[in-house]
Length: 263
Length: 285
Image 1 (spheres, rainbow over the protein chains, first blue to last red):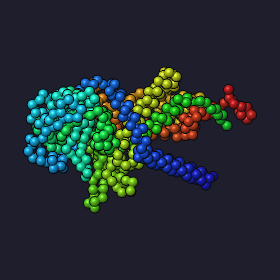
Image 2 (spheres, each protein chain N blue to C red):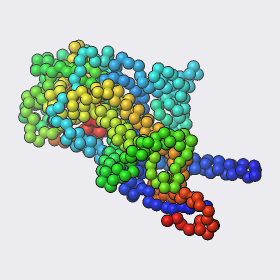
Image 3 (cartoon, rainbow over the protein chains, first blue to last red):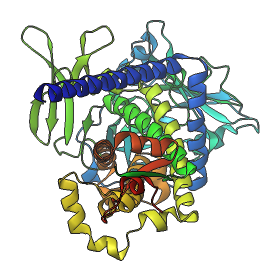
Image 4 (tube, chains in turn cyan, red):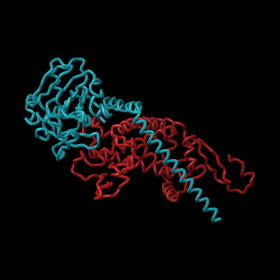
């Protein structure tokens, strides 16, 4: 009897092992399948439906002009983390930095009635907004900083966008790879005209440091950090961004990140 | 010989939604691990720089010989987790720095953009499925009939706890109904844990922060919401482990069949009066 029971147990054990092996094999197969879907041409397109749904739902749920949360000085992060480029490695940028951006101008052109160039002093003399806001990085961390800058809506009003203009494209100074591909980003006019969308030239009551985007970085407080381009050289108004670089509206968007980064 | 009878335990919409939910939650968990890996730490407060120690952090250091060590800090305690968390083998079999190991993440390689696509797509599947499930459960009276505890259920709490710790399960007619612990657990998961997890996920969205000024500070701030999202997901994993354990010990194939074809076998209680073998063969009324 004992021998019999023992063999029953070992049969049970073999069966358990077989089931476990089957489960492990099945999950490895499913994982490999997910990797294949990720690398396919159709998979990412299907998954992208989620982005469109989130964008539509978020815009329906929240008002166009609702403000992102603002904080107090007590909430300020001790140092505002620099992420991505900390010092653009281009000769043109380095020359501008040597003279504290005295020779830098921001060109605003594209689908506008009167293209203009703004010096840093000109931006500083415009109406400004100061806000203590949280910067949410796509990676998962966040930091709180105090920003002061000119309202992008005022700059847009000055250049008189044409009726066809739908997006605002930020062309930046920082090369992102060995080929020198520069950073760029784009937002729509709704976000561009939002009251908290500013071209910041001050961080925590000091001149915006190079590691955080000097001479100006844009603040788009209702989207993730990568939308808030640093080292802006030129702002272009366009009807569509399909013809610009990878065609997805931004450097990280061309690497597969969402254009709408509200979530 | 105990007599068996088969009855329809789970209606087809419940079966379809159960497995849809399982698939969506699995993908959400694994793509969530990949997203976590982009910043393998959990913080508490309005930002990551609120001056508080990490709740959880996975990191990689080096031995004097240059080999990687995986470390996990949990509430100030440090654990060596090489091979599992902090540092684990990549596709080439080499140790590399990553939070969760590649066999637990979607996609398996470090790829935040793709993980977000999986996560934010299946989040919609999960939410739509959940809304349909609740609507169906109310309309079909599945909720009132099978899940809502009766007064009698509440009186049986003590016995049900004893039954559970002794791994004893009801048989016969009693097996047709969920027990009180089961009902409460399902209700807490369906109407508590899962909605809370969704809410904490949405609390990380900078756009949805504008819905009501400062609403995410109710739970301690954005980084707290990220931590709570992770804790809620962990509790769901615990629920699934207990659920699967109970499924196994209360009749694995019977339970699995009932969630695929809907049919569940119950053993009818033996009749206590003396009877001839021939009578015992007859199906009970």
